[in-house]
Length: 73
Image 1 (tube, rainbow, N blue to C red):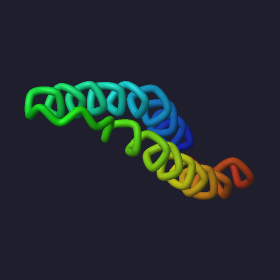
Image 2: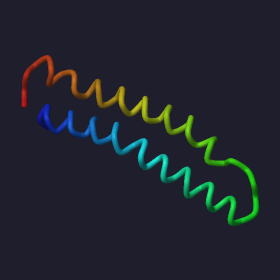
Image 3: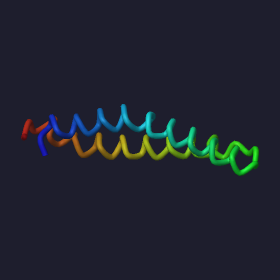
């Protein structure tokens, strides 16, 4: 995988991740309100997603490191 491709995946994950999470939380709140249960279940998912995103970001960063140091594409 080229350094550009790895960087592009990292950027896409950083940009699209919060957008997907915001839509998911919005849909979760709508479903909860429609069912008549006024519990903010969407708020529980946000910290879990942020932790998972950090872990995946670290994994992508470590995968990219050999290409940065070696200059191999």
